[in-house]
Image (cartoon, rainbow, N blue to C red):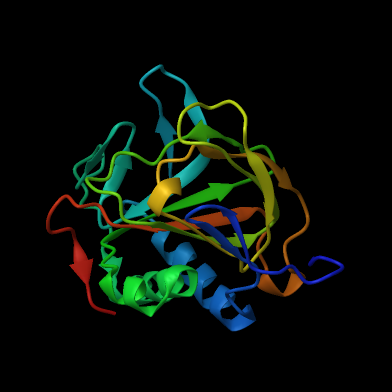
Length: 221
């Protein structure tokens, strides 16, 4: 389900770029197929328990490095190695950064990890910063499935000012530079808005990142 009128690329904040419809139908289908494979055990889709004891409403799978609250690790709770970060996903990340900031920035981008979050009808994501990577390289965000309200805030607090952006299936959002550590989250998913041909109920968000933590698990594909 797309917008009545095509959306245009825009800079939501300095360093934060939204490119609607960046992934075509074929690219979305291929990425979805990969996400479904990554979600399978071992080291597949899991529920994250926060240090407070709360449980995140999204379910996640990590590539290259495994995300845990406040840190990255290489193995799951049962000792299973994290899934590899594929070279072709790194290529997508470089093309995305080039789209946002120009060819030179894309060529210099060397991602080594990704976090895949699945949102069902009830899932949300509170405002947070992506600050556990060792560096300030841009974060590349790709959306599949249901449209969400993506709240992009400021770098100082979880409060206003913020901008709400609707991210549809196939949209690209890149944030780096002065926006790299902005608070952001997903207060709402618009249920039933996924393109019918995609065959996905819910929303998948793939964020590609540079960990800066050394040699990750990698596998050419």
